[in-house]
Image (cartoon, rainbow, N blue to C red; front, side, top):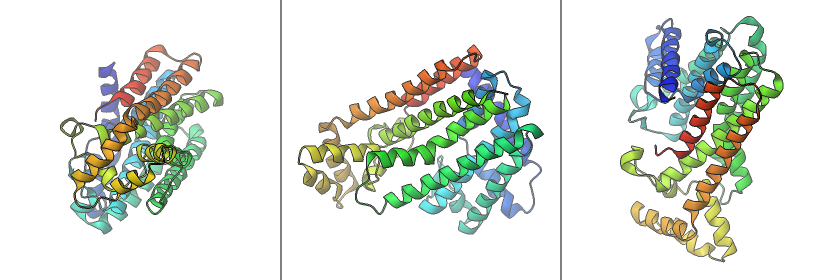
Amino acid sequence: MTLDIAHLAQTVEKELFNFLATYKQPEGLYQPIQYALEGGGKRLRPVLTLLANRMVGGREEEVLPAAIALEIFHNFTLLHDDVMDNSLLRRGRPSVPAEYGLSAAILSGDAMFALAYKALMQLPREYIVEAMRHFTNMSIGIMEGQQWDMDFEWREKVAMEEYIRMIHNKTAVLLGAALQIGGYVGGASTPVTEDLYQVGIDMGIAFQLKDDYLDVYGDEKVFGKPIGGDIEENKKTWLLIKAREIASLRKEQEVLELALGITSSKKEKYDAVRAIYDRYEIDRLVKKEILFYSNRADKKLLSIPNLEETSMQLLQSLIHTLAERSI
């Protein structure tokens, strides 16, 4: 199974750089794009597109333009995230803004957005309009999610329902669209593509909750980067929102807020907040929530009739691998 996923990722890699090969000048525009896309990553979204297409009996060569479009778009969002967050690192090396400057990063990001649509337009003619509709809805959803995430930075309290809505848009709709478009180009019916979309949504929510978990409970040596950043920034993650709910029920809000207000040392703050999380069993609760969404994705996938067995099993494996990952 792992080899097959790796093969799909290699197929994406080859097609991606074949597509980019025609875009060389001006270098100041295209070099940062090449750099961003050479930075590694799992190629998860395009792999999902190819898997969905396989599951419904589609032809890989027909859906590859959509897979490439999704990968370019995903990396565009990461590039602009780095601009907005002033991030110096991305995947263990200098970010595009750090390497090429802010202006170049903004312009190259804009070009990636356009290139994603250019790639999508290479689909067979009969699929272009509907695929673009799904792709555009996804794009708008992600930008709405990003804005909600930014809004949360300035709000003292965020409800759990608001947080789930935010990660639904910012993270999950891209996985949903990857499966939906892959199925659509493979000739699947609307009910099937809608079910595939929901599988991706639940995968994406589980994926983001696992990210939240790893930032507090991950092993730095395995995770590959320092943990505790969300605690340091008082980021409104599932873990903090749940801790505030429990603190409110126990009339212990002041204890939690005092810990969150520590400024003397990052380690002291992390240890204080982590101790409260441990007392509230946040570790167990977030794992339960991750399992809920990954199991729901699995159940929805199994309910879809007439899917090709090997590809479906690969997707099942991927659902649980992402939920159980340590990086």
